[in-house]
Length: 268
Length: 307
Image (cartoon, rainbow over all chains, first blue to last red):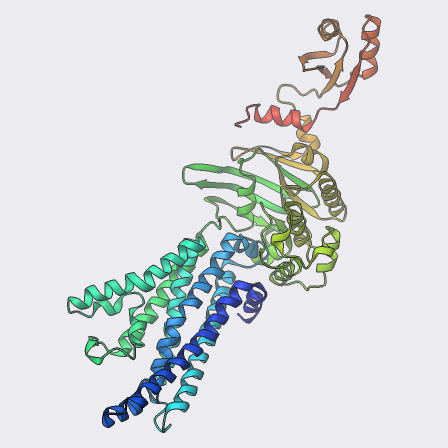
């Protein structure tokens, strides 16, 4: 796997679009996260009049331990869509340049090709999860008065890794099946931003929990918006149900990708 | 030993039958030409044996299948259809990727770039290359690791005349060095100039296969090899009447400016010249052509352009 990743690295090392999108995530997410925390803490500390309310926001706010992990994971997820787009691009580029054919002509098996791309997926998940962890740690230390229960919400970092994996697996599937760059990205955004949420709303308005089983909803719900009032939370399912569902989706996508790619004619 | 054995290979694209029950073997040490018009199934055939297309039916084996096909492909240099490279990478970086996948070192890269005259441009991005340069880079890539088998699909595509001559010379040299070369082409002249063996494919059907000499010598109507001679004079109509009297002239076709005679093999230019002179006609052109693969090809495949 490491050897395959080294070859993938050669492919992107001097690719400008890769660096633009990758660095956008690396830079924009921390800056936005730190800035949000700064503004939030500033606004609660200047409110002043209702002492008790203020103290509660200060000590129980989204940017202090242990809740900061959720905030970091959630905001990382917002910016992670950049990486999703980049991953689709890296897959559809291969089809567009017909290099997926050449890689196999030169001696990779079809599984090697998929494994190589999967190694890139793992790289993205690893880097972004590390960043989510570091930002949570940094902002948490800046704004928390005590680090006593700092590790309480650390599971959200793990949830972020699961979310990142599922989002990229969907991108992988779309890239392999659709093959055209523009169309793939449009379909990806449509599913991520529209289809998933609309289905969730329909099911949730009907009063059942089926909405949480829609393709990306399990991971979206594991990392809920920390600024959303508690009243809007309709979920009664346990976390572990969502985790299992997310893994089931990942396994399903992997199965479809392998099954399709091993049998198909590699054409543009 | 056979380098490649193909057994009853068929490929359908929906309703289109791109290959129908094609079988042949490529002997070691040959330059094996796969000849056929555009869309006859040449690239489909090569795509299947390189595992980028899946056959509907039939099988193939490289080197009598001593290794897995992935390991085999690493030992084959292949240029299929178009040069496939990462547009945003330099020539050198592209070759590094190919070398890594093949499991070869990078030490061959300067050598193969020199060989196709691209060394000076090794740092230029692929998308700044002209069509001919892209084609030469693809040929350079096939030579990485000095493989014993080379597969070229339309190798001279997009090259200028000097480039075409260089590549043909390169193919001959590679063959002299003991390498087996499988080459698909729709250019008859190319196959005739460089190949030792040929398979002719038309509409996915294998029409004939064998050494170039044996394919040329097996005539469709009789077994006598014939000779093509082009002649012209001031009055071609009169010349035609005279030549019809000459023994050994089988048929005469009227060209635009000359007559094309199909003669028995023993006919000589001298015989024709003397005969015409004796009849009072001075020839302005006398051109002896050995029967070309083109003639054979047209005999085998018919003359419609929609073959």
